[in-house]
Length: 330
Length: 309
Image 1 (cartoon, rainbow over the protein chains, first blue to last red):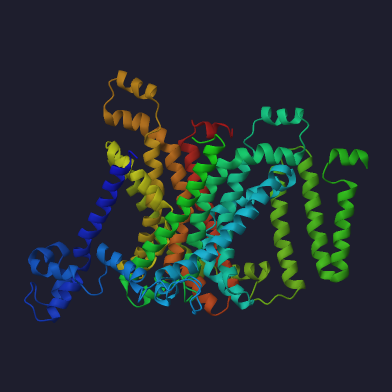
Image 2 (image 1 turned 90 degrees about the vertical axis):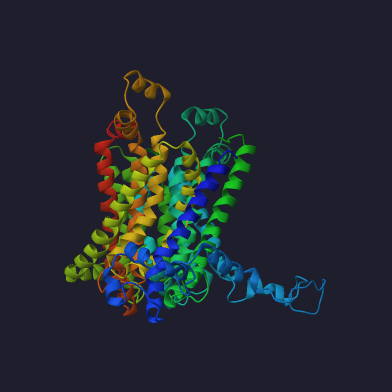
């Protein structure tokens, strides 16, 4: 709790810098528009303006600065405009929302009128696009984590596997595999695999290796003393795994889950970028960049940030609960 | 057999029988599948035997055999099952492409890795370390910045690529800007954490020497922070390459690894795509290796480095 004030200060500082940067970033665009509109500006010609420094221009033409903030398609939008855009493309889409009661004669089972469901069903809704990105992320994350834990158990219990696979697992972390994510999607489409699975494959690959590396470390954490104790109780291999190794690896598991889920989300978004995906946050980013809709790009970016925060926060909450109950909280 | 299974616990008669059965079943359904399975199990058995024996060479030998086996299996499967080169080219085809197009690959490497990734990496790292030093005197700002920085480090920053390409143009400058944005926060957070990692006893010792703030900073706290800084630097090497390549998907001159991957894909020259991936993998590992080497030189005193000796 003692961090609330400092964090708020830093966030306020970031927003302040953002707001102050809007003017200089959009100034040349605004000045250009003013020149074409026939206003008196110094220097008068566009060519001369191009050769003059930005600070000089701003000092000479203070009247244009408000126009730079009110610019239609800015290079850098104001923070509040992005917030308005996010609202308009989520809850602002609601039309005639009313409670119809259960069992009404419409197709939806919620009891709300169709106007309410526009929030999640409308093609312009950011929640719709966010879900199109989150669903493959979560599926891939689950697959990657499951396989990662299995491989880690195999590595810990099998010396040949440890020596063969582990160096490659560590080396593969240095390869920028994310960069070819879009290509993998297209290849899978060519092979006839579509839907959630191609994107999930990327996010599962990206969350797989952090989990393997973290879990191998975690499963090896019990000391020789603890292992010997289980040995004196003549515990079997599986018992050793379930009662000692897995519980003591949990802090490592959660640490790598947080890294893994963030990587999985980034993977899905990048996978959507140049493949011409129509839905998803990555698709919103791309269409925004094609049509110069900067506000749309920033809105998609912020929603992606909110998704990442929710995912990492959810894992952190489970971690705190679980480790506290097991007496391992730091 | 008893003696042997005692010596190599995993290579018992039962496991050998199981392996033979798997190969036989595979071979009956399709002789090519049987061949692939036989090779895989033979190599795996060799690794089991090798890892059971003593000797220091196995640390290098076993992973190498594993890697080569995967490559051979890839080659065999593509040739035997006649996989179309539009889906997966064979390693030999990729190698031929690499040999044929060295000048193109080199130009792409210079554009993306040297101009984009490396420039951005150096600028981002320098900015982050300087920012951490500037923040060093303010506990208040540090307490606020650490959670925010950790949060931002987990965000999909690569999504800012379209914006930065719009701002800085199609040249390498926009790629360097994406890389700066990607590496800044991981390094900043690690440096701030590292600068706090001195013990009260050590700081008191510096005080008894009447060391000034900057003396104790350069002689005690900055060296003590180096392991943390290198942690951030190592994580950021991969991020830098990813940022530089992905940013090229949004617009680039007609050279660069991201550009080549995108266009070769459009014309279905998959061997070229894989050649670029191989270059990226080598560049990524080399980059990481260089930072690790610098770490070994500069933090030779740290327990994690001494243990390796």
